[in-house]
Length: 310
Image (tube, rainbow, N blue to C red):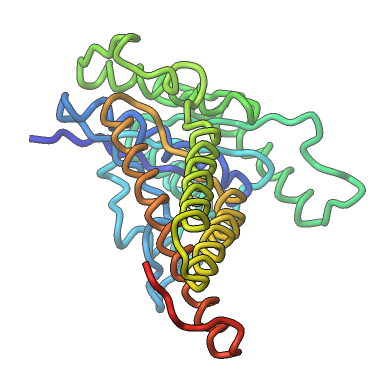
C-alpha cells in the first residue's frame, strides 16, 4: 500500500518560481521513493480548478483539506498576499481580514502541523524608484507579520529559513529528504540518489538532439545523392531535393525549443531514447509531408512533370 506525505505550499504570487521548484523536487524524490511505497503529494492552489461562484481560497479549500496535510511550506519574499473575504480570519492570531497566505499559514499553526517558512533574501527587495504604494505597503506588512510570528510562534514545529534564489532548490530538497527519513524511517543512501538530487540538475545535453539532427540531415543528403546517381526520373530527383531541404527547414524551430529529460537510471535512459525516437519520427514525417506538398504545388504550377518513378 502506498504511503502518502501531503505538503501544502503556501505563498503569494511573487515567488512563482520557488513554488514550481517545490513541485519539481517532490516529483524527483518520488521517483526514488516508489520502491519504498512512499509518495510525496504537493498541493498548490494553481493545480486545482477554480469554481465559478467561489473565490480562489474557497475553491482550493473545496478540493484540498488543509487538515490532511502533513507539512506546510510557506515561501515569502516581498508580498503578504491578497486580502480574503470577511469570513476568513487568522486561526492563530485571530486577526480579521487576512490574506490567503496568512490564512493557510495560520491554519498550519492552529492545526499544530509542521511549518517551514522560507524567506527569500535579495540585496534590493524593493526598487524605491519604481515601487508603487501597494509594493511598499505589502513589504511593510510582510515584515511586521514575520516579526509577529517569530515572537508568538517560534517553537520547534515552525522553522524559519533565509534563502537566496540560487540555493532554494538544494535547501528545500535537503530538508525534505531529512523529513522523509524522520517520518517514515526510510534510509536514503547518497549512492541511491542521482546527482540531480545532490548538487545539480542533470539533464540531457542539447548535443544529443544536435547529433540527432545532424544524423538525419546526413542520411537525407546521402539519399539525395543516391537518387542523383541511380535514379533517372527527374521528378524523383526533385522530390528528393525537396525532402532534404524540408528536413533541414523542419529542424529550425525544433532546435530553438530543445526539451530536456532527467537522467535518473536505465529507466531514464529509455525515456531519452523514446523521446529521441518520437522526435525523429516527427521530423521525418513533416519533412516528407512538406516535400510532397511542394512537389504537388510544382505540378499544379506546371513546373514539374508528374512522372515519378522509384
